[in-house]
Length: 492
Image 1 (tube, one colour):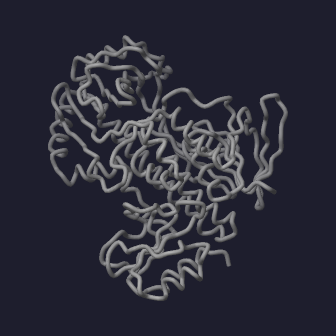
Image 2 (tube, rainbow, N blue to C red; image 1 turned 45 degrees about the horizontal axis):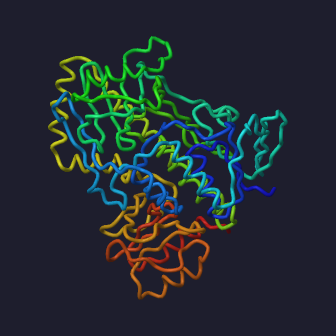
Image 3 (cartoon, rainbow, N blue to C red; image 1 turned 90 degrees about the vertical axis):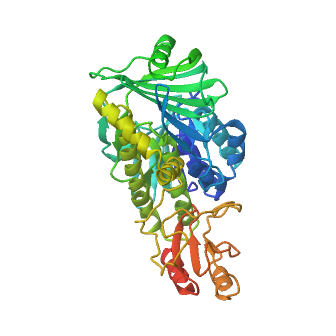
């Protein structure tokens, strides 16, 4: 068996998974049944936490060159502003939403993957799989009709909402289709107030959201009522203009449509993201309302969570457990949170009834006037508040009095991210001057970075995972806590 992992699906999630594994030196193959990348904008936003994780790949630079940085979101009702959330105060190297069409995201990730000598194999469809305790035998169908049996150590299904991998595993995709039609238009607009900011307009007829993509080009989304079980048709430019006139702040003109589409919102999720040697990530594991723009980001973060764990196992550095079982535990909880959060946002935005809407608008105006609330909302939007407080990988050390807790994102600023480069190593944040720190690094050369980093606060030691989350927080001098943690996960 020459290939460690087969990645099925070459959308943003599959490509991110392939990049992460390839840069860690894992032998992979990535297949995609479609003949070419999407030419549609689809998912638009990369949030701060995703950009931080992509920075570990060395991939962020081209995205920043191509994308549009958005630092604020406005909620309005007619010409009245209900609230404004600003992102430029979030403690991250990327305090903004980066607006970039999915087509360009896939292009840049595919180019980055090619730099590792890995090419997406298109017109190849997974049609069956058989997993054993030792590997996965996949049946692949090529465009000319011939079938191939392919053996790999692991298989990762990143093949979208209609995932063949999920169907082959017999996993139930539990959830519902929300009872409303939606229309989407990627169009050119003039007359937009705050043209480089997100605008969400609450109206008695429904919600309207306007997202900048590039100068003068925007994504317009609006709900249009009950589906009655009928698939929504694609809208016309005239319908987009009607919604803008009715629900927007006024004087916005639409022209030159790039993409027009009607859609349903589905909210569905599998119970577990893993079955033995097979994993699910992205839309194959969870789909939800586009409110908040977290779908693609959640999937890319699935990839970043799994890849370093699988790499340590494939490289023979760590035992499979508890690393691999933690993937589903950690990411399923996040998927559930995103599902509920996006559903709540959609329900609030599409609330019907004049009295309910009036109360909603009044209460929202009060809430958005509170600074702590705005900070919490900004951290949630940018996803820097995502963490794993219940993770089985948390060390349960004797926590110092301050600094990030176990399971929390480590506040890495003005230095290289943990997990950068070609090795999925943990980082030790501790004060120098104690020989036991360097001794631990010498004892675990394949698990720890070669040098200590400065502690987040005096009086503590922090062990940070290759994906930038705190694995262990303990008091100064308690080096045995670190050694015990690393002994627990390393290959005996």
